[in-house]
Length: 135
Image (tube, rainbow, N blue to C red; front, side):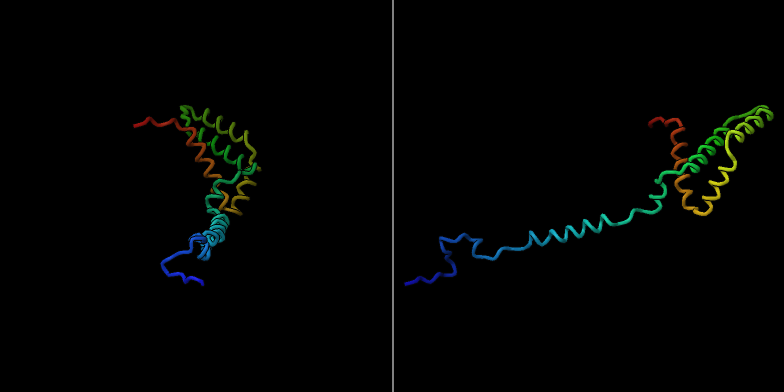
């Protein structure tokens, strides 16, 4: 004769989790997590920041070098105007005007490329400044 099981008694041979169907929760979050990771990795970076951090071309580096020379020249104080004119002429002869004009023309066609040049100039100027004393 078979005994009927009460609702309050468990059979001694079966573990408690073997009677219930297994929960699929631990496996169901994997595709969702994968999808979230995929979406975050596919987001495009900030285009302005990407433009600022790009590597300058050779003509653009030449333009930055020219600008830094002009800044250095303007910081100097000359008592004699003839000496100032000689120094200015020396700088003008040192750089190729045609190359500078080409670089400027290329930048006028794509003005967003100026961001990288301004960023590089700011980096160079910040590096040239003496460090401030801590307060």
